[in-house]
Image: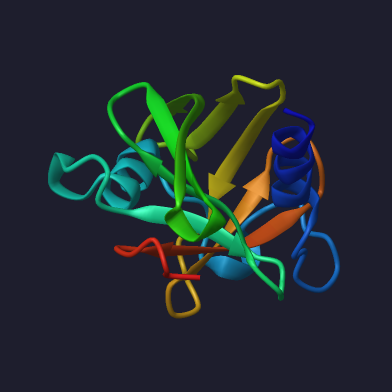
Length: 144
């Protein structure tokens, strides 16, 4: 359990690109809730897109949305799959969307996702701290 909390903290604070940013202004603005859903659940197909962070030595938080409320993580290169918590995607199409992850082991992390990726790496901007993370969004659990 402590490892999951530590991993969530790493996901939150690690891989900050350059100076800390508090918004998506340098990346084309923030996605709407509809765009976030389209990115992470293409054509309504849950479990087909994975979001992960690479700390330089290994993948962290290799997550996929498995239905309209829950997400799971692939640990140890996919050898272990665990239901990690719930999520919400909120916002209107005239305002930035927010995806919020609520971990079973504790911790709630909310992000805007920036519109313009660098390849398959999107900037996830934490809504309560001035940190943005480079998150790989891929159709493979080995995308990182």
